[in-house]
Length: 159
Image (tube, rainbow, N blue to C red):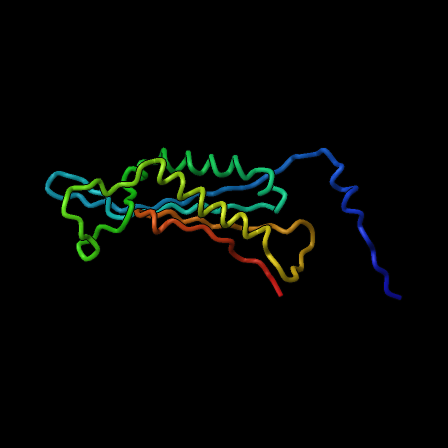
């Protein structure tokens, strides 16, 4: 005998319990060069790993965005983020333009790449096999240029 159950989704949305929990971890690496009495930053990146259910991401989106933006822009390395790669092979500027990104540029880039990654959770198609709530993981890596900022959904079993 085969049985099918139909769950009334509308009944579930009537619950006013809005508790949510999303975990965020951070890993930062950087290099320094000490030469002739001065110290220089020699590359860095910061990786944030987010874990939660669709419900968690939906409820916490704004707080997650502002928390990561605040954390990164208040870090000691944010002042060294360049707008573009300024290595000699890619530089064609004739003046001494400021190569560093403003906090506003960094903030907008973080929001853009993180929002896209969160949106990808809600636009998934295909079958997913899970027992209990499905946990989604997003990994964001922010390097020393705005072009190196990226966030994407990782892992999962899909058909």
